[in-house]
Image 1 (cartoon, rainbow, N blue to C red):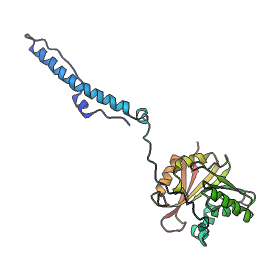
Image 2 (cartoon, rainbow, N blue to C red; image 1 turned 45 degrees about the vertical axis):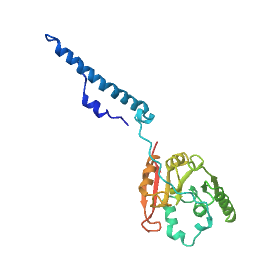
Image 3 (tube, one colour; image 1 turned 60 degrees about the vertical axis):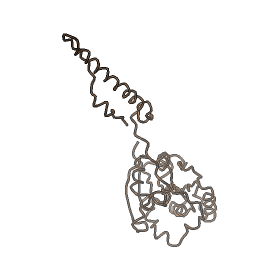
Image 4 (spheres, helix red, strand yellow; image 1 turned 30 degrees about the vertical axis):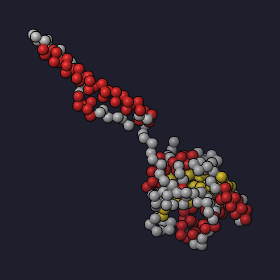
Length: 261
């Protein structure tokens, strides 16, 4: 931000003093009086302008952009994890089509960020087979324990759980071919930071999928336009935008890839 010159200071314009030396000296005396009055006006204005500059925040003095306002986010879910195992969810979300579009196939490595009950984790684990791997990432220790027990029960040895940080998925470097955030993005308080931290985990050409619903951030939804803007800030570009999940006019499926460094 650049502070504009105060209006009163701009109206005064450059200050010039001209000494006129006619006979009798009256004009000279009047000109000095005028100059004195101008200086009396100018002094407090100069002090005010200096005070504004000194009190400006560092980002204003350096010419940097003002910090953006943090958007609202929903409280992360911590209730009964079994509610995600409702019959017919596969068909409503068309999860096999989602995995096709993300390139999830045998031998691939996948990250399920905000894994919750592991609903998507186990489906991706079966898709990549024993030659692939799925990282089930969540900030809730109970969810991690739940998925560990589920993987053991369903004999899926290619699942690895990660208790992550809210703004860092902590997935191993250069290990991921595909990522899905399924109804999780609206709970991320610092999405740009999280997406930036995710970049180091991605293999070349990795695809990042986000399934969510339109909302204001705190109503368990977030506007599609907001997601696209935040992803761009984190260094990603939009590859595809679909609305076939649930097909209710509210839910959307976005696919991103990291821009070249």
